[in-house]
Image (cartoon, rainbow, N blue to C red; front, side):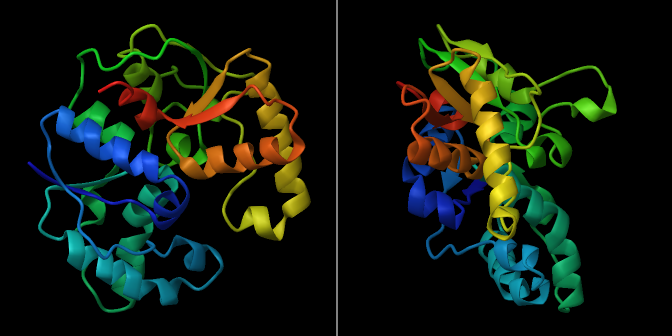
Length: 248
């Protein structure tokens, strides 16, 4: 298969090591992966702000750039969910056919559902608290949302089980929102901050040294609060792909 790697703009600007880890891990697993140059924002921020029509040009650019690939993978569940679920509507309204949205996957679901990785990966001898983001649990089916009262599963946890010497734990209210929510954190700053503080405290209560998840935006939100308030200086943040690629 031919796989295109999409690195969302905020990951490129703030978490470039995550993009590097994605590329290294995919190559390690024998995937023919390409990173097309000239990538831009997927358009999610403007669409969330009520300007969906203005994101149509970015959607078409993305579709044209990745049209020839069998899959497109990205280390961001929120961007992936936006592309897969919203691009078909946005592009249809602007008179364009959408080809690649249904082939766009988060890195976790691609590794878990398509590659079905089952071999030992790296080594990470630390206690890690797992963050289940809202888009991942409720739109991309990475884990079972608690409100549905269904049997629990977690694709992130399944992949972390392939890492040697790691201890994975989950906080109380394991899939409660961290409060980021993109535009929500700007328009409802006080509420977003309190939600983030509570979520961070629950992660810290597990005694984990690291907090991990599949969405850099959630990790960025909690890391920003922690850096500003300094309540848990011992805690570090790692995207799950960084942990999976550790030592490769």
